[in-house]
Amino acid sequence: MNRECPSCLSPAKPEVATVTSRPPLAQAQGEDFDIGLVVDELLREWKKPTDGELRPLSQATREIWEQWELLELREGVLYLWSPEGTQSAKSRMVLPQKLVKE
Image (tube, rainbow, N blue to C red; front, side, top):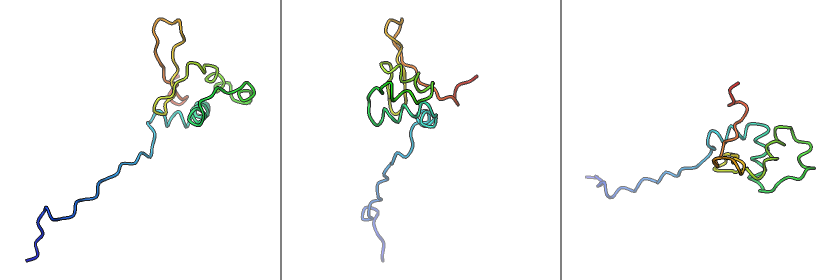
């Protein structure tokens, strides 16, 4: 008889989860020309661009950068905090153009 007991069998290889994609909103922001430039730069180096660096960028990209003090990146998703002096401090997601309903 050539029977193997269940406990003698080699254990199954553990599955390794790999993260190959970003959350859907982060992905949509990355695909948006204006927001994607800001997110990519923030992921590379968290520094405020100079006026000279901003000059050649689109108006929409400059408007995001002009709110530098309010920017926050969480799990690859870009948010803007409410300015100081508003009734309640809250963050708002920066929506890509394709998700904005007209």
